[in-house]
Length: 400
Ligand code: ATP
Ligand code: MG
Image 1: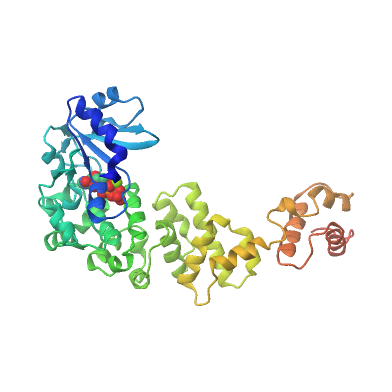
Image 2: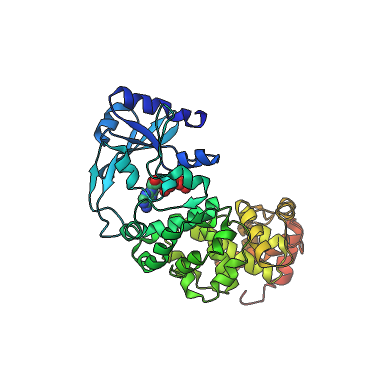
């Protein structure tokens, strides 16, 4: 099958060396759904050290769990040794991983039937848990006993609702019952794993439908930040389309609740410094927009890469909104794009006040010039800027 062509050389190599090899997981599910596939994951009877010996470019990412990344033709493949798992007493990692030779055992450890289908090199499907039937019925069904599976790894509950948001599938009745009875277990799951799933949840094409589900509400209301607001679900139920990411959803909720203590949320979800900066910029720009600050100032201070995320959030939060095209046009018409573009430098400012020592006052004057140039109050012309500074800051003024 064409979509799996890039994995052919890896499968062939493993099989020719005498091992079993299959394509497994999300790519098989998405292929059966006619959706574009993401990463191709491979399961094999070869042990990680055998896989490492067979390929020249191997990254040992999780040897203890049997996983290595094989790079081939600029593409990465996760190659995992067939395994079964014992209990997860820390609710993060299985206590022990047993390598096995039977692919069915490996499929049995997977979360949902739609994710527990293997594809052979000869294009045959190995589907011991009825994954294809469930895909056809748009059903998310746990493999085996749902309560036991959620107990083993409670993150699977969140995965169930993120798949319903991505695929528009319903959660099968027994799986749903087990989920609603196991909700409290989510407290044991690490925030990093929750972050990954929530991020995919908020990007789902069927986010609105998923947010209307009772089980989504119950689960979200147990998660950090979401549980702090009694009305958060009312806000979320108004959401009609996917967010750019979890971060944008957090900014949206924080803004609706006028929650300025976003810092604690960023910490709770372990955002990276780049993500924190993005969230802060988006939040500040929304506040400026709400208080009707001049649009050129918003366009100037916000990184253009964030324009589409800002206009998307503004569209959700305010009646009168700004289109991405308008904001881009405003950006193109800005007289300056950074402080360096100001026609008067810090040194120039100093020379206007030979008596004064270098200090913060220079930056303060430049800030004022910057704002006045952006809003069109002053042209970006040296002589006029000089004149304005001299006029605004008479020499005899002691402090400015
Ligand atoms: P996506 O397309 O979003 O990557 P995916 O199904 O590939 O979806 P991954 O998180 O990449 O999801 O996991 C790959 C496969 O590993 C899954 O399809 C599933 O078979 C198995 N899996 C992942 N997480 C779990 C889990 N917590 N419990 C059991 N099986 C899991
Ligand atoms: Mg995947």
